[in-house]
Image 1 (cartoon, helix red, strand yellow):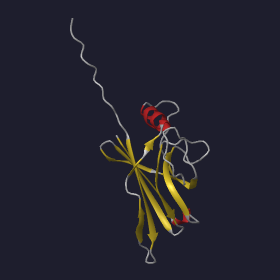
Image 2: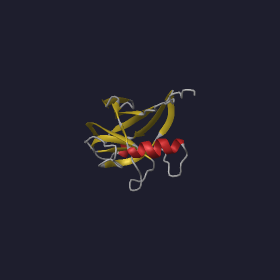
Image 3: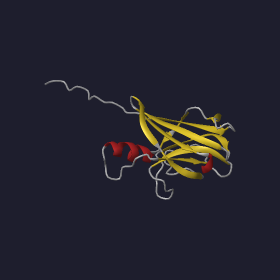
Image 4: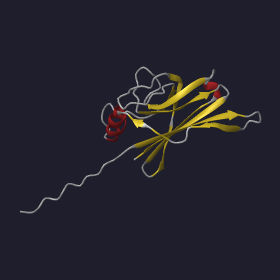
Length: 163
């Protein structure tokens, strides 16, 4: 009788990171970065793993595609069971998606000063499938040190999922 070989196994891990930058417009038309979160680790939610990653790879009915970013006021850590961020602010922005390196999905979005009519304190960012806030699911999110986003400032965000 021949010996059975141990099964080959491979683990696919997803590590997520987000970075936000606040840009202030100067009178000469240029802009200056006045706030930078640096790269912060994020939490991929249970729904994110199930519907946005596993089901999407398998083209399973009900799978979801990350398409929008949302800022929020939430300052408590994002929990893997969350389906929305607390205190969603302003509009969700459609994201641009690209691969940045082998096994890295990079998603970017930006908000113009016109998207922010009054100053607001922001503390979290998340990824969603649709623009409507009442019927979507949080794929991933994270909190960061709260920042004041003023009405004369633009904001850009980069989100990466590294496989």
